[in-house]
Image 1 (cartoon, rainbow, N blue to C red):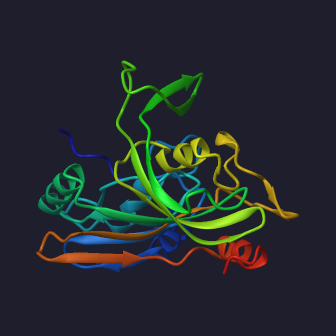
Image 2 (cartoon, rainbow, N blue to C red; image 1 turned 135 degrees about the horizontal axis):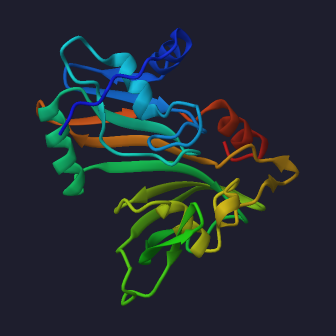
Length: 243
């Protein structure tokens, strides 16, 4: 496999991606990805997070590699590996489902019933032009992929609820589609029926944040990384009385 050609970044881009660092050691680099930044494969002239990782490349060494992705409009903890052995170790751990992910989400209308539970609904990919969607489907559908999520209501008010979501599998848009299937789509998720206004408050974006990541560290032991929700999400939580 040919090495990737380095991407030239501006000083502004380099400063920006360095400002996202949550944690770094000799093996791993974790970032707090903002909403609106594609992890990989974005369109247009704006660099993706994957491309911005060239800011951390050292002479004669590979740049950090993404271990997993977050949707463009999802914020929060995202993990990279700084060495090839670390990337291999973490990739295998991810495939073996040894990663534990916790997300925060604002959903409408109000809390699900029951207030906590498991969503075990297979998903399939649905291409519509240049856009890709995930759809709930029957288990025997030829394109069905197993998808399992857990949820817990942290606080509910009339018309909205603050949720903790835990994906046991890693399908594209999984939490978004599962919550919509439950009848409680994530606020700001126009693609899957999420409300754009809640209790008179405009929802600025998809209200989904990767709050915590627990995983086996390549050097041994278990590592937990956390990122507080960004200001726009904290503001909506407070204005809705969900804090």
